[in-house]
Length: 377
Image 1 (tube, rainbow, N blue to C red):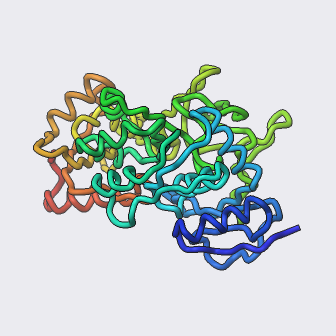
Image 2 (cartoon, one colour):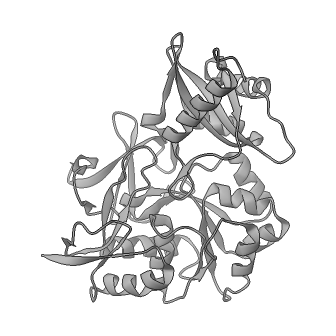
């Protein structure tokens, strides 16, 4: 059995009624920017969404109505029940779409932050129009940081019963800032293939199971798993002991109760024979501003560690400062050999760093700054 697929633009006013019909089985499945093919999908599929493609080519993920309902119910159970949502994320990705799905299933109308570059005043104005009762929003770390830097933005954040933060790793200093400001922040981990966040503050939602594979990769199971993809990549899903699991590309540790995400398996750098986790170095350098750590090819070291930094206003980070902090926490082999200051970091998807573009940017900026050969910047 199959059902038609209707591809729609990423507009909340068009997506809300279409999602309602798709979830009830009364209308076609909904796609957002997935193109005209395929024109039909399996009968149980309600939503087709593209992955962010932050480290590879985007895939089109098939999400069933039952998986979306299970995700929304588990989220409501973990929070303060169904409530009103503020949409501050793009709706071509799962995090923004889930705000709409949760609203549809709760019978509430989401408030939408106006289109355009994310700015605290737009967020504050949208929050002022929300109804009373449980109030939620989903943000990426960059949005949270910008709101915490703004007094009115911080006040607006305090009005939410929960502020979900995901889409990228959230550094410990940012979380401390939010909690010191009395913002109820909840970190989320998940992906398009799990209907978005399925682990909150390190604890799986009800019905979600976690294990670590022999290769150190995080594996997830439960009713929130996607049906699959429109084409290929089915080896992402495996059956073990009668259970269907998603093999993610993320490394992690699991103590039986809490999951710690250690970074992506394909992001690990090897510098001078030492394996370096970019996410671990980024966590140390977080006080400098927005940071991404990449590896640049080097004849002597294989790869050298480079930190791209968007400084906090009024600060001038230095390589010496960065190297000292990382050496103290992680060891000298993990310390960046170059620090490059830039005005913005390349992003793809809802706040995710485009690491391939960041690597190219770092290489270009270093070559421009040192045309006769790289030196510490």
